[in-house]
Image (cartoon, each protein chain N blue to C red):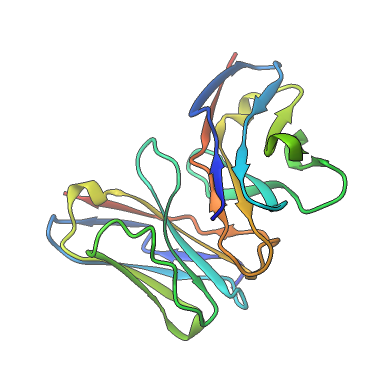
Length: 113
Length: 114
């Protein structure tokens, strides 16, 4: 069965600084990969997804993520963080076919002025 | 419907009582998930329904928890003999079923056991 690890439970960055949130997965083949964001008091929203092709994918709100097969990683990045990016971020992995999506435990991002 | 709908949005119950939480997925979505999000915690998988297949109940924390999905659409999560540690936000999500499709989440039900 697949698994997802988000090693950082909580990250604090200054507004305007760059951001990288880590995600590692365990699966025998290349899965489908997702990042979701949960803003305070809101539901989860899809940021971006990777299925195949270009390993650097662009998402909403200026986020991007890079799939690295050799490292089994799908890290989320943003060059300059805004205060409104403070939220909880979840990485998710899904095998092909009609199989269960597995979510990581999340990384809570705090943005300081 | 336009999105995943959960009801009630808030529920306060006394310890020992049973509660039912409802999820209306997006029409046509064959897969439905329940998650629990305790204060300050991440997503805890509870149960997964996919079409007419037997549900994946591997995340249910105890036999006090159960869920059903009627007619491949609406789902009800039931917690019997609630305990204070059951207090959390219960989230429901649905997808078109295939792994490459986006999961759409409801706003959740905040359960408080007093």
